[in-house]
Length: 233
Image (cartoon, one colour):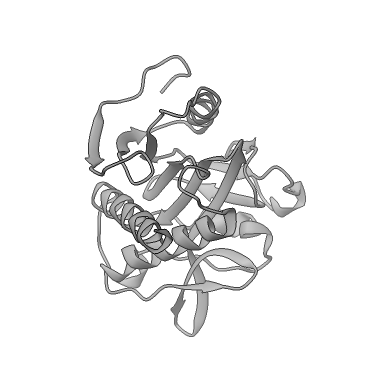
């Protein structure tokens, strides 16, 4: 998607009584270059009004390394021809590539009465709930955002999280490894942690397609937001 291209048609809308609960518009993209999507998220967030709906964008990226706002370049060990892009999100370095579902979560956190730490926990729990649908047990790790799984006695990362908050609204989001080439993760210190191992659903024996997992992840995020709303009332 180029920076001037309009957004794709709405694929799914969850219904509700107010903007605080819904609608959350879910848009499905394809394999999209990273930087145009980053610019589109920034533009969407800058142009928001009190009446703007919240959205989740589902997509994949071609191979790219992304570095967080305060990221340190020394965490890129080998570039091997893969583009490195500096971003405004939090966190250190990560890798995106085909076979990984990315969910960009564009929410008005103030309207939903969500604090940033609550939002991070909500997204992690949504990722864990998605993994549970594939009989995979995910867990969080104190001080290291994202979701991890035990495999062959080791704790490996299967999902990453990085957000940017501007004027109480979020963009960027989460990524979940489905069935991808994991080698590029070995060319970085993932999320700034030397020696951190990664995995995906395929390596855990769960064969799935990104276009299946993406909507399930979006459903899990919407469900977690609805639970937060109910507990907050």
